[in-house]
Image (tube, rainbow, N blue to C red; front, side, top):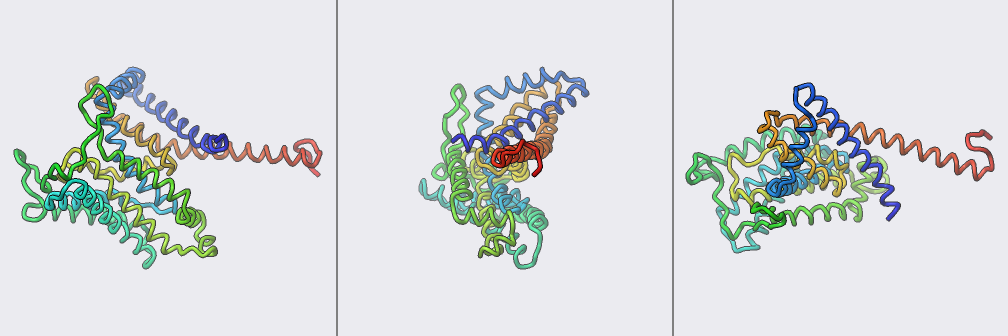
Length: 370
């Protein structure tokens, strides 16, 4: 237990250092723009901890968490899956269409919807994996291109006469509304508010635990990490790098396919033109902040959601809420610097400890040469 805490401590200190540095930079920007930093932060904290805000923070953090896990499993093997955004939007649209056009009894309906989203996301990301192992195409380039293609496919299918219908009482169009039997009820976890937490938060927790077991407690996870550390060493030990590349992209895409499900099955019940976009890119930042650790990613997702929600109060105080974007950007920038500083300090301490131990074993004073 104590050794586990010691291993985690440098990462926790680095994340805290990054947050503090980002707040300092944001304070300077606020002061230069004529706003009072302490007043702005005070308003954000006060508004962010209201019951309604807390429910919205948990809901947003749920989708952020799934998105970051999808990115993180690729990072474990040095694969940069930028296509999470296109993968989850295409998966959510097709899953919503199946759920809307094919009413099924409860439980079966939810299971089918989730499976469709997982399959679509996985297969779409698998294209990038196949291109990488067969043609040597960088997954960065292919996933960016696949994002554009996914956007085009969604736009093509989301038209009247194809998969879209006119929303009642609105000019908006979207897939048919999912019947009540296919929805996931919310949970009243936050006292003092009628806003419910997405029921699929349970799915997010299960996925987080499964991610930890897969990466840290399975043979596949060992091969995954070994390939990410050194492809040549992995090949020498009998690991097929091509197979691992395709499998990792498939799993990353499968996780990405779940990103839109909490919103789809818990709130909107249809995929329409105003369905949330950009969650994939947010997941990249949160995965970096959480160092690809499921617990660290959870804290990063909550922090990101808190900043998003609490910034809404700033406009009412004549402070541009876009200031929060600076905070989020500087957090990602500072976390890279903070992790490197902590890594160097830790390495220096380890070298000193080894030097002291060698001096004791040899009977010479510390720092003396033989």
